[in-house]
Amino acid sequence: MTSSSIKSVLVVDDSRLARMLISKYILSVHPHWVIIEASSGQEAQEKAKLESPNYVTMDYNMEGMTGVEAAQQILEYAPQTIITLFTANIQSRTKSQAEELGIHFVGKPVTGQTVQQALDYFASRA
Amino acid sequence: MNNLSELQRDALLEIFNVGVGNAANSMSQLINEEIQLSVPKLQVVLKDHSEVISDFIQSRRICAVSQNFSGPLNARAFLVFPEGKTHEIVRRMLGEMVSADELNTMEEEALSEIGNIVLNACIGSMSEMLQADFTSSQPLYHLGTAYSILSSSQTDDDQFMLLLHIDFSMPKEKIDGYLIFLLSVQSFNELIKKIDLFLSHI
Image (cartoon, rainbow over all chains, first blue to last red):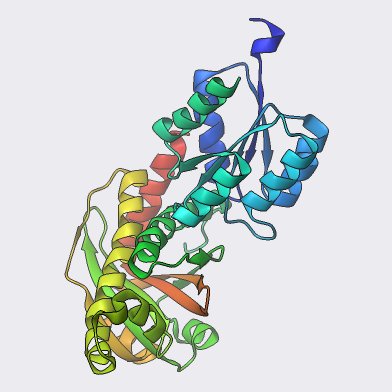
């Protein structure tokens, strides 16, 4: 295992359960990856600045700023970050907002399959 | 007993979050508008819920759609909106297809369908996450005070109420909605057991 193959993922979701599930599925595929967690858009920004993650999974519907707003701000100072919006808000408007920002969209629930969709996207952009 | 752990509460909220998110997607396709949802707020209360109801919706007149769900646990589920607030949804749903007169008569049918979509999406999400199969009854439409509707629908067995408050915002209208689930002690315990089982696999 080379250090370049070890990636870090910032998992952003106001649900602790969702964060636990996403982390579990990521680690089951990539046991050596580093998981960083944030429970709000604000915290996501702070952690993104501190930790410079390679990848981000971002919930949409959170207290304070939405996941799209948080993603937008992260991309402003770290445009190389690869982000997937991971949300139960599967309306076309949310999808098109993600598309406009150039970020990927995956609909909840959090399952092995949906997390794999996010991982496939990360791999395709690596 | 109704004190859920933080993680059990989180699991329930995530189930409803996914369910309502899916339902909002179906609804937004029906009315051709984006629907913004607030972060849901959950309360679990015991049967003597009159105080909670008065806190939340008081004696407001509401319109509600209810459905019974049966499976490993049984629940009576309600989607509740304040009376009068639903015209906009129905108007957008049916649009130019019908006249103003017809709109009123169609309201019950249209809201029953919305209730059907939202309640089934929540139960579908519960079914998927907790690995349990449910069957559902036909949706029933109610109009009246929250107190009268809930008390008349409640059986002696129903001891627990899950009360979930969600704002549905459309570009021109904001509607505060509630999802209410009435459960017997046995069904509530079964729900907790299923959640614990689910959590033990993480």
